[in-house]
Length: 434
Image (cartoon, rainbow, N blue to C red):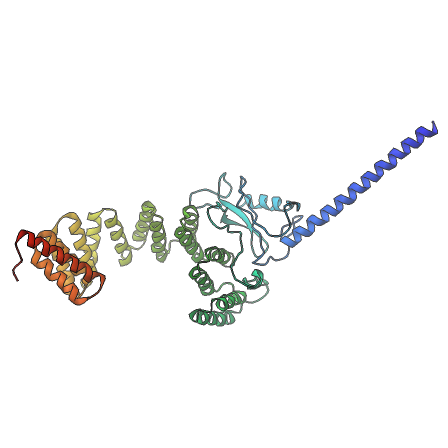
């Protein structure tokens, strides 16, 4: 072979080997970087779980069927950092083969369009049951606490080692100290003590409630929401944080989120009677009269002898114009509690709505015989007398209100009605006889 041609062939082989070696070196470095990043963020790599994640740093990884730009939110490397998928996909397949999780709208975690997501909890394990963030409010994945002047991780309750025994006594002691700080207006110290209380015993329900209440009082809605999410992780079987979160979302006008967590609350509560009134109150806040009625009717069916259930059912029907049902319930309750003036007032209100003013006046008088100084009942009787043309009776009742509560809103209203009646009498030249 020509020596020049042989030299060219050898040179090409050497160049190829050099390029391959450089490519392999870069690949190894990239894989090491990916592994280090995954370990630092608590992501499952190669099917193995990372170390226990701290509460303040755990990312939530969505596993929905369609992209959701608001569902993931992490701190750390820039956008150029490689995406780590190994192990997570395998874990997602295992999760998808498990029991379906049904949300309040009847969707399951394995069905298209389901709001169910997979997230990493404080124990480093994937879990389901939290809906993907819709973008209408603060992301549930965010761990902002708005504690000023200190590192977030230092102020958040931290996950305890599974081998450690919760110190309930120490947790209660710190809780009591936090409550004292709250009474003194030292909110920063109170937050710190509450976080420490939860470090000692993360199942301390009162500590979670006080922390969320304090954040609500300061207007830290996002921190309050995150507290409820953390409470769910710490006590998976506790229905209370689901109700609180549903109520918070309803207050913020985020109906979809409120309905989801309210559905979870109903499922977790197992139909216990005390939960019906709470669920109905949130549905009423959402102006969902149908769901409110469903819950109240279930309550009445579950506890037909419950005075509270019958009262709530009567009130609901009266608001919606079901006067016959409301009247029957109020009358039955009055027979059970004959000394309750409020029931006679409510019966009078229904009769007035039905246009039976004679029965309405009789019921108001029955109520006043039990509570003579109730200005609310007096005002109803005065208005009814005026409506019936009994101006003497109306003036007497309005004057009595002014005597009982001088300077009050009720007294000011009564005074305006008296002036109106007197002007009417002057125009007609017909003053009532004293």
